[in-house]
Image (cartoon, rainbow, N blue to C red):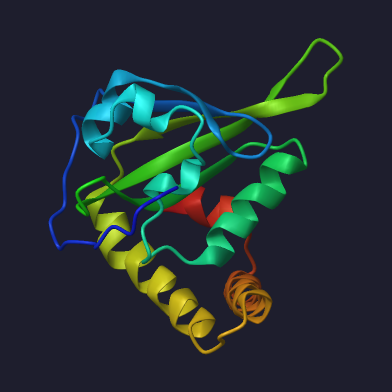
Length: 174
């Protein structure tokens, strides 16, 4: 069971050439983590394997972004997404995640693979943080989990439609 971690205001970073790599099963439980993942997140491999990937979810991340991510990969498509994660000690780190479905020989999805890179700091500060804050603010207007998620997802999709774009196109345009 995950213990409650209090977020700090300390950002940790990793080096430009480093990749944070993980694999999960269909339910999002970690089946592989690389050394960079363990180092940045502050967990050992043993502490992470078998745990839900959400063990590193930062409370500043809108649920709607994860819905978009899961809808995309469950449909068999890749996605690039900016994500704020939380380390075991409460520190945070931003990543540009590339998440893809993993397939078996019969081309059935059996899990997911994610590579995370150092994000462009200006894009995070000037575009992603303000957008996610607005989505999160919309989600927090509702106490019910389903209403909260629906409100945030509606806000996010309306934002994208108002700019005549998709999340993928937005990310690639930045």
